[in-house]
Image 1 (tube, rainbow, N blue to C red):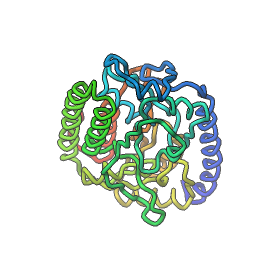
Image 2: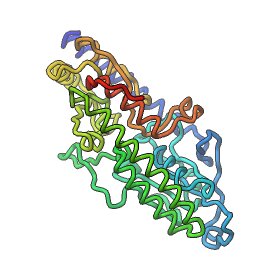
Image 3: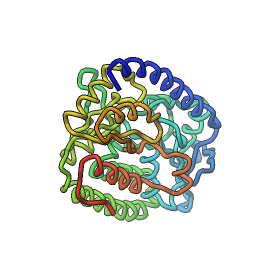
Image 4: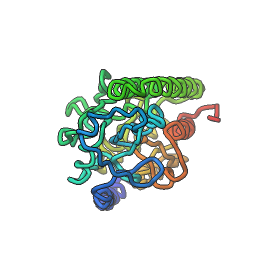
Length: 331
């Protein structure tokens, strides 16, 4: 594909991409305003009043917890176990960067016991919520600014398993303070999950040791924590938000960069249109497109199949090892 073809194709893709984003936004708004999605794909209403929350005395009562997006919800479920009734605000298949809760969803949030959120600019609607208890999963963590000129933080903390462990500790401590009747449950469940995350980190380090390359091209600029942790360098097609405009000049830059760095894999995302990645892949020797997920959410299929955070991370590493020209294969 020549530069002229890129100039012609990019505006067309931009228009298609705009329609794609509008579709996903409408899809998000079509979710019932009074319901939230629980882990097994059914809808869970939250109807506790704040008076009920403050007067909870029965240790068998489940804490009603709403999480802003999938990875945070999974951490809550791993820690809370049978002691919590957990649901996630952003529904399957919806891009969280575009999500804005409706009035009825805000009312449901306000009637929950706890809202757990990621922070770092991903939930700009958080100030609208008057829930009794909020847990900031990223409390005490330092944001990575991939666009220092605009001072836009990277919210994808969970992609670094060691930082995910700190988020788990923050959630654990928050739940123990809010619901001391189940503090032993929260502590032991968190301990078990922290062991899983530590094992994941060690596996990633082992698998990436054999890699000949350290550069990779994801769709949007979401892997700064992961790259910093494992000595890699990302060169994204888009900016921090996947909705950022992608110009013909940027596509040409990425194509030239991929050729210069001898990269043969361009990464797309499961919740985004892969055609931009395909345009780049077509212009590089032996180019192909694989998925590298920012794990912001699940597709409906993944949710129904019971796929979780660690499953997604392992698939990411398997695909990343192809692009980094690694000798080992993740088992």
